[in-house]
Length: 81
Image (cartoon, rainbow, N blue to C red; front, top):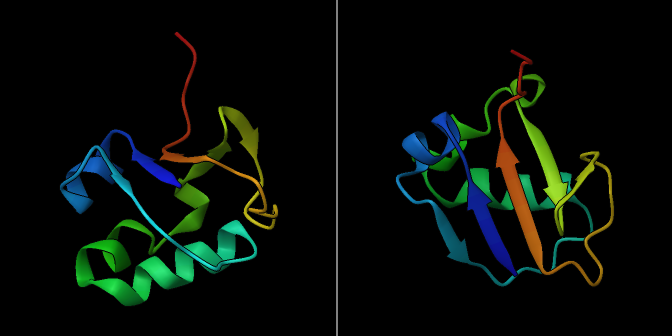
């Protein structure tokens, strides 16, 4: 699947996107895998209350299943303006 990172998430990880193979069942499981991968991921995913996730361009929850998902995007909450 493709993982996309936006705003400060991208800055902490150092990549705008990457291809990633996982057996994770949910977004939370995927985040745990990424946190264990390297310190930069642990920093980026240290506070999930400051993050949002979209699966295949649809806003989703962290307990959502990943079966069949092709793209996971992580980004901070957006404000109107």
